[in-house]
Each structure stands twice: as C-alpha cells, then as structure tokens.
Image (cartoon, rainbow, N blue to C red; front, side, top):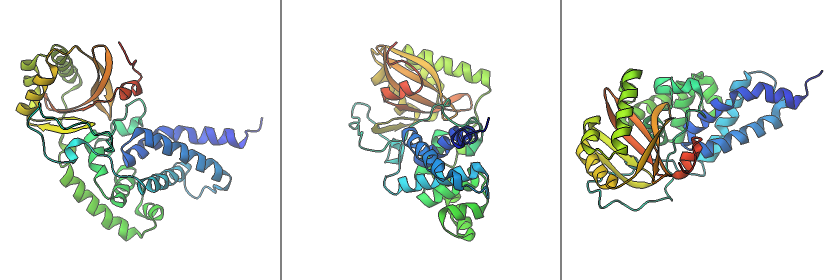
Length: 310
C-alpha cells in the first residue's frame, strides 16, 4: 500500500512535536502561546512539505519554521515576567499589591508536555529561573542563545534564520551569555539533594504547609528564600519576610498539596477548601527550599491533569 503524502508527513514530523513545543515555550514563556505556534508551525510545514528538498534535516527545517513563527509573534507582544522582574521585594504581607492580570505573566510547563531531553539538560533545560531570565533578553539575543547554546546549531544556520551574518551571531551570543549571567548567575550552581533526600524534604514541606506549621516551614527554607505568587506583583525575599507572609496567609486555611512536576522541578498543586487554587514550582538548594513560585491560577491546576475539586 502506497503511503499518502499526509500520512507520511504525520509519521515523519509527529515525533518532533514535544520538542518544538518546548522550543516555543522557551522563546515565549507561555505554554498556551507555544501550543498555538506549534500548530501554526505544522500548518506552514504541511503547506510547504511538497517543496521540502532535504537540504537540511526535517528536524532543522521544522525548527526554522517554528523559530520564525515565534519571532513574528514576539514582534507583537511584550515579554513575560515574574514578580521579581518588576521591582523590589515587598515587606508587609498585609499590604499586598492588587492582582494584575493585565501583565503578561510567565507560565510553568508541566513535565508531561515538555521534551524529556530538555528536562535533564541543565542550563539548556527548562528551569523556571532560566526561562524567566531568557524573557528579559532582547529578542535577537534570546533567539541566538537558544539556537546556539540550547539546540547547538552551527552559527551559519542561526544566521540564516535571523537574516544576519555568522559574525553577528557570534557577537550576539557573547552579549546574550553575559547578560544572562547578570540576570541569573546561579542557574548552573543549584545543587539539589539526592532523590531520596529530595522526596523527604518535599514530604516534610507539604505536611508542614497543610498543617500551617510555621516553625517547620521556617526550618525548611534557606535564609535567602524567595516567594513569588503571580498574578500578584508583590514578592518576598529572605526567610523572615517569607515566614511573615505565610503566617498571615495560612492562618485558618484548609490546604491540600498534590505533587506535580513542572519545568523539570518539583512542585505542588494547591487546593484551598477542596478547590483548585494554585501551582507551586519549588527550587531546591542543598537540603532546603530556596524559592517557591506559586502561580495563583486554578486553570493551571487543570493543565496538570488534575480535577478542579477534590
């Protein structure tokens, strides 16, 4: 039986969908936007498939289409942020800034949706701090860094996509690396505990959070711990400030914590009074918790395949 062009296209391009989604997510900082761009990529690719001459690999060809789609989208939208990228930390948990849904907030990506290779690839992976830092790079620097350092493309191929010279790619990459190191110098320096110790730490954290055990939570945080909770622009830096926030917010709350994985990191879906409330992404450093980004969006809980109520 002769394979039809559409069936051949689906068979050959289908295996690249998750890594293309991951690529677009790195570029855009939004899973929803990335999904839309992957759909656009496959539509463009199908329309051009009959003219594909194999001068590059099919994977490289798809990445070129996806990258150009992302660049076009970024020309018409602002970069996505976390609260720490907007200003200094807050100090008073009783005087939180009002939620601002108009700000284009960075989103987490469930590990189930991401490219498995990216999750374990260190700096070239998906850590939330890295994705947040990438969004603060100028678009061309962001693109060059992803193409060269993450995807390991030759400078000539990156230049072809961007319409610049290989020499310009090299200079842009140097600027991007320097700026990324200033934005998030500790990305490569995170040392997580071994798997068993990590599970124990996270179990103790979830238990303390559900019981609103402030003393136990205090023992689990690093001295310089950071707490963010988009879409609220307020964020807190330092264990003492974070504990003041948790003391104020956990009082009388009935919370259930369900383990999830996002951006290659541990996390929890939070339920308040049985209803989906937020997704926490946890950053570990040594035997303690260095950062919690709590995305206060019930819809995100459902994105992780969990029910709206338990």
